Length: 241
Image (cartoon, rainbow, N blue to C red; front, side, top):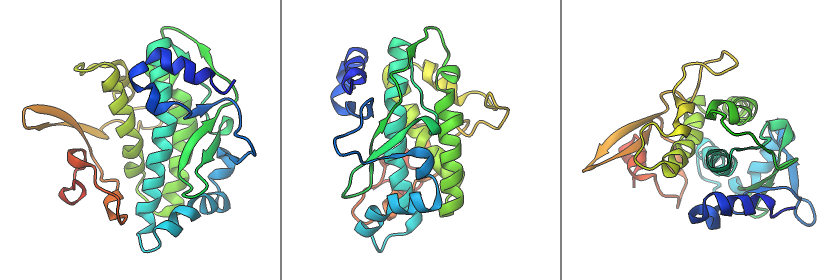
């Protein structure tokens, strides 16, 4: 069972599969160690999950450490579902209440998500339909919690998620400014009627002869000792090194 999603991923995008296998699982690891995402985003649950990373960087700004943790969380959550939807029409159960997180015991950094099932093939769905549970039922409540708990701008956290969605959408349709996954950024409103926080979170800039994406808000990771910046994708000069 645990290999089923990895098998789909290898079929969908073999060039990336080796780097992404094991990110989404259908079976718990030996000995357990998974935490329900709904329990994670509570005061006690989140502080406990973040503790190993805070211990590793005791002098760092806590907001920067939380942002770094969220980058791992969002990349683990978002990239594979976009690939499986875009290539195979597979729609996965990604609501916050449906998933469990598996984290590295030494750092607390997110490593994988445990899903309740392998989803279903539903061809022809737009990105906003196929990925709505991830955006509205997972990212929205998770980001709202982290923003309130850790005094981080919601725009910063949404940019953290947007960067990975933008990257994989363009990776799957290189050179296409109308790549199907980019439709998530287009509407001003979500299906719920709330403002779409992905809209305007990423802009396109010229770097030499190339055009690339740049986030609107810095993720602050450069404030964590020993963690490098994001290069030209960062809007702040000090965050690019």
